[in-house]
Length: 553
Image 1 (cartoon, rainbow, N blue to C red):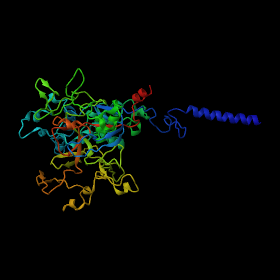
Image 2: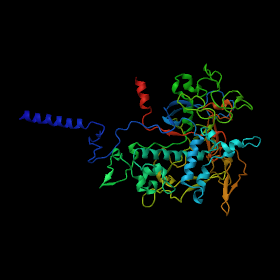
Image 3: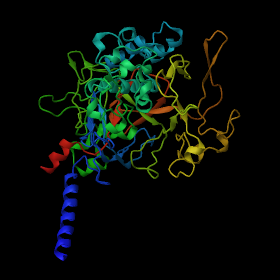
Image 4: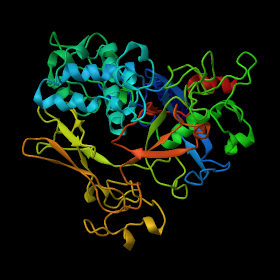
């Protein structure tokens, strides 16, 4: 009897072990043992995800620690880049600056989907066009660039300029949507060619697709209906003989994160290109340029003496003597003219300076944070209708913003989810943030604090952080925009509306080629020497699979 009981117990244990052994695969839950991807029931999860796909135009930048700021002599004596130790997560970055051709693709899409001939959409296209008049100089003849630089094919692969910070942000949003729209079509989720058959009432937006997919493409059943790959996402493509809509979710890992402007810390880290160097002095901030060495000329025997970037070499010298050109350019140069740094990034010094995401302040507050440092967080949330659904911008509900320059730009386009500031109820009992706008958080000494008496203005006593100019615009009865100039005495140009730009340009001396240098410019103004490139966050592991394999071999 005891033998039979013992045998049954052993059999039960063996059977259980066998069952759990059968389920010990990627589709078996480690929490419950259930088959989580069964077609007969259960939940669907992406268990064979490998890693993030590198999106168009980008290269991988593996994160790490570095000395942000300048540790060498500060000949300008501005002391706004005191060295701090920072850590940056892995991310992706544009191989080159955004070019005229890339930006023209954006403009032509806007013109096609939102015809400027229609009054309601006129300012969408007009607000996105770069300011080509930045090339003009009262004592210089630059009309050739005014008329040709943006659109002529000779300049197609030159970095776009005349783009203000806000326009660069809007381009980034557009690029995100176009890339993800193509991914969905490639995966057979949406109708083939859907991206070409859109108008103002049927545009695609990534966040709308993830939060309210049935309202994407204006709710068009035909355009949302996919092809043959529906089974890859756990849903049968036919139901009762009729095709049904298949929606990709964030958990499927198919769509790319957003294209955006890099943070200042990311840009400086990427420009230094420390991946190929293990020198202690370099790690401690002794690297002067994106390339190796302390000089701007090449020491390579094949290119001995050639300049390694496009910059102003002296008074009246933008490119050297004819026939013996030092850097091969006078204004901007075609992208990829010079060698890339160790991350594979081109023109991280010279050519054009570049917008980054950060609001400018004279300090980098590493005492509060030294991980993914960024100043400029303004937290928002999706606006919700009374019926509990997200609010989508209607074709006639474009949200415009009138800049201090008088220019009108579109900030929310049809098909996008309406955003609103977070409230006190959203931050109740939180310790990591307590407001929507965090641009002013811990931003300086006593003279820059909110209630420092000398900075209290009659128009808003005690409410302004910096005594900076306040420009405004007014609209007359006919709809014409009239600028309002600030006649008050001001003590600084720093405000919440000025952004950092990094890197030297074709107009700058070699001093500004140092990645640690930082300057600022109003976010709604543009120049002939500031361009931009996009970045994208890395989700998942710090290193790519190929890098991990190389390290272990």
